[in-house]
Length: 472
Image (cartoon, rainbow, N blue to C red; front, top):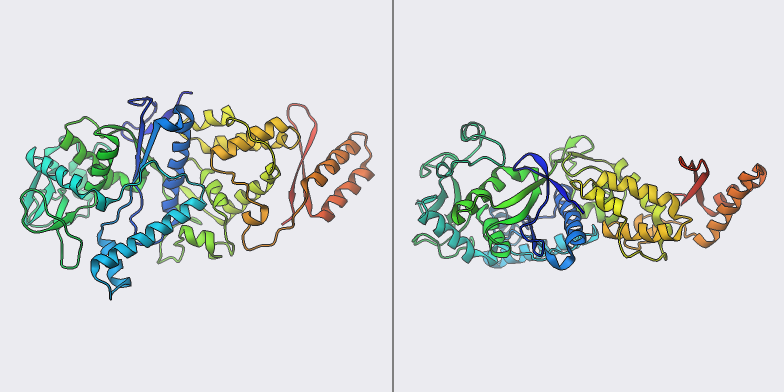
């Protein structure tokens, strides 16, 4: 199977050739655990979960390593812990906050059908590696010490800005950066900084006597380097991270290790807005994953995780997505229509056309279109149903949920599919012999059972085909 991915670094879609087909390596930036993850955070989690599944399908499960980190040292964490647990010692409050928030994150994304990554490193468990990186950068002249800070010297890297396609002059003119008096250049960024009283602190690098803590960007370079090597295959995340976070990761890693690249392929998912507007707390449209799953805040309904996942994959990952109630309603209706697969056997592999669609830069809209086509014939073809079920499982879109579970908080009538299918066959037979009175009677009988029929002409055979769903 030929896999092609769009590379932000080269700005084109390219054939993917791993450094080692027996050890395909991917890193994706994970959450900063100080609060509930919002629906925008869910997009890269879902997108790169699909890529993880695809890589495992192509190269074998045992040959793919997926690293998604947890940031558990950060200014926002410190502030939130002090606010929430004022009576606890700072280090205890911070640990309590990060543990609780990480557990909530794991619970929420598990509901979205997301697989666990191969490795999930925490920033606080990699301080030694961060200190070592700082020391390497200082020794090689790419970083300097000032006012108990270690700062990266952006002017020391000739092609800084390549990922975001910006010149140094453009970045200096447009950046909102703290121009501290101890910086050599306005774009220089912090690798290490002194800790304030009550903040986490570790022995500092580069001969600095005062204890301190890492800057934001250094942690991902350290964790990726430890678990995937100095150069690896794929680095992913939201487009909002391309600059400055990913740009700075590249600078740190390449300059420390003396490599031409950090990751060979950089992938970024597009922005998310809500009902046509940018998501923000001031607009009252800020939605967490947990609120979608557990409350009726959005569209006066709770939404099942599979519904959220299906809705998210309806737009290509590189395009912006408008998160709407209608999008969720349509996704839920589709999953309702696929509930006839319960109890069906499962094929050994997903449909090759779906795998091929995903192999074209994760073209999930095309994959979903193929799934709709398969569903039309799967009602009456056991082999197609088995392949369809395997395909949905492969994409994380099937978990054997009941219709009531797919529509939480609302009563859904249970219907025995074994009683519905013979009536549909009898109705189609009546239509073919032009006995429309009998056809209408059967339709009314099904309607009384709570079944809604959908007739469509097969473009190839010209025959009428019927699918059904529960009235809701």
